[in-house]
Length: 247
Image 1 (cartoon, rainbow, N blue to C red):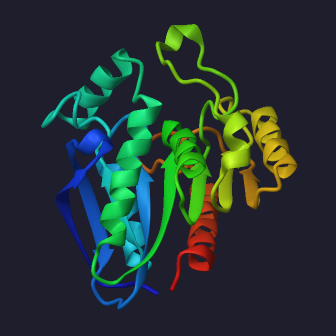
Image 2: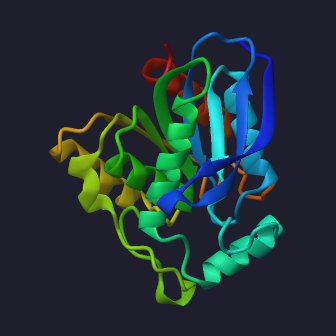
């Protein structure tokens, strides 16, 4: 069912009380709704990510996208801000958790919020969604092909990410994982390792891997886009959030 929605740029309190930019999309014809913090991918706070937020609002969830690069390059294009952030090794983990916490608090304070909040991220955002769900009290988490939850980036990447699979015992909520069989980061072996770690910790999770899909299969503006996998992935996301975030 589609819903009427509104979308606008807002300011939120992020890590350390820093004021950062965020994009909020929310249904306007729903009396009570759950919220989703959408973590943008390494290419940044871009149109494609904001469109995903509106897609969630269309299905009855309030979705907010904190601009994780607000500090590096305020007012810069998403490409320029991403280049600056990448040159500095990416977003520090503690700052990411603080920004997600601030975004979740903003969602819970909205009129009509049922105070249930989930998180979702793609690529580096998938790793960060897992990190946030292990560091904060959330209600549902979605990891879309999160790179380096297991394993570390190659040295030539310049990224300073470290594996976070050891945080599995601290996962605070059910986790949905969506992966491409042809992906290398994470590879099918990486997905299996994460699955085993979560199972050993007794954590609720469901994983789906798609044939003929590699990294970035949700990205409608990239050659990696795979229609069938993306459509099926969205079906799983809406079902998952419907079970865990709905009133």
